[in-house]
Image (cartoon, rainbow, N blue to C red; front, side, top):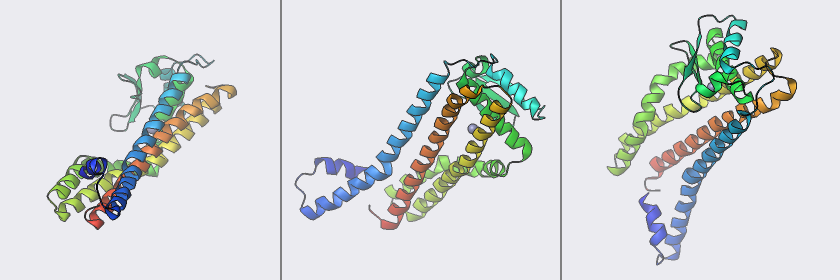
Amino acid sequence: MFDTWRWATGNNLSPSVVLDKRDGKVKMLLYIFLPMIIVGLAQWKVRKAFKKYSQVPAERRMSGAQVAQSLLSENGIHDVEVEEVEGDLSDHYDPKDRKVRLSTQNYRSGSLAGLAIAAHEVGHAIQDAKGYFPLHIRTQVLPVASLGDKLGFPLIIAGMLFNVSGLLNWGILFFAAAVLFQVITLPVEFNASSRAMELLARGGYLLPEEVPGARKVLNAAAMTYVAATAASLMTLLHYVLLARGGDD
Ligand SMILES: [Zn+2]
């Protein structure tokens, strides 16, 4: 961090030092700014896709809530409730309370985007009911991962500030647990989306010509997970290199 400021201000450094600093600058760009840009782009793309397809009503004229309810019973799941939740794109499946929660817009309207998201959340409920293995692993890793999410970064910073490698290593280990959680999330998300598209098309909730629009929303959403995971992996690599190389 402090090095960044020095590169920006140090014009009178010797050539070899300049080369060193340039190397550091490239690393900073590669490990921190590039991932941030990719994550930002992915988030922008999902918002754009959602905005577009949340304004396209599906021919079937069913709300997201009705479709979710119908898909759940079609799949023999009768103990999961569909509930409305506040917030923007706050849709999720809660395995503990056994609830599919849909944000107001997706709950009430029957847009291509809304139906795609409702079916995706039902996809998670089906994974849960069928004991889909990656979801099970993900649930097991969750407590360690959320601890890692809270403790990883502070420990790494403390380790670097006070130059205590033990702290730094523990921080990296905690951070790695949080990254592992993100990696396991990928197959879970991809699988829920492919289940969703199959259910919507096969059940006639979407017409064949409506399928590509709905799929675009779910693909864009999946890309945000891929981008965030790639960014976290880069950050983890950055920390590991820092720990190994001392001052980098
Ligand atoms: Zn999901």
